[in-house]
Image 1 (cartoon, one colour):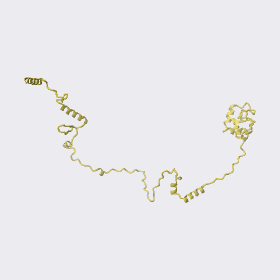
Image 2: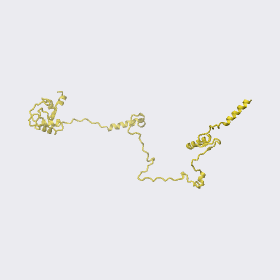
Image 3: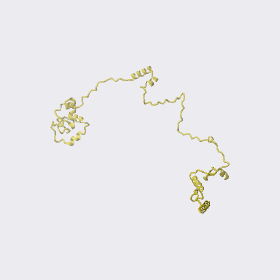
Image 4: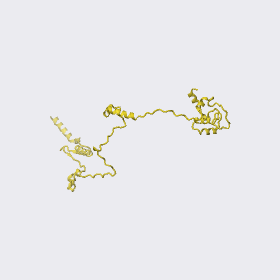
Length: 250
């Protein structure tokens, strides 16, 4: 019994000598943890705009957003005796002035019917049986075919025009009867016929056929007064009889 009493006295003495137990609910720099939570909630509410709710009363604490209430406006004379304007339906809207130089539209009437607008006049529906049968009949189709036959003109063939006798030398007959080939000398020529004279005189003809025809008319192939057959083959300005001979089968 004495041992139990002594043990109790020792425990009591040790408890009195020990320091106070730190409060786990206290925050750094705050008297207690509740104060720390309250200030943290106010800081978050200021950032997010959500009012702080008091845990004891469960009533939201509105933040001071800086807005002015209607009572404060009424205290300084703002918002009193404000006349109510007329509704928007009673406000007259000025009409735009009519444009000058424009022709007013004409309304359709029995005496002035509106024109019919074709959907696509460029496309024919003559191959559409339903479209043709709706506007044509056997009688109207026969009348149209008769009108087309009456307007048709048949051209009768006429005689071929006669060739004039004054056509000059026949270069086709000359090509078929010439004894030599192009470039093969057959006739003697003067040494005075130069290249410049040959080029100048040949340039005065439109085609080699015209040059050959004029060459024969001036006494060719034996004579060459213009110097357009300097090689003496009987063909002026490079005229070639081969196409005519080929056509004749020679």
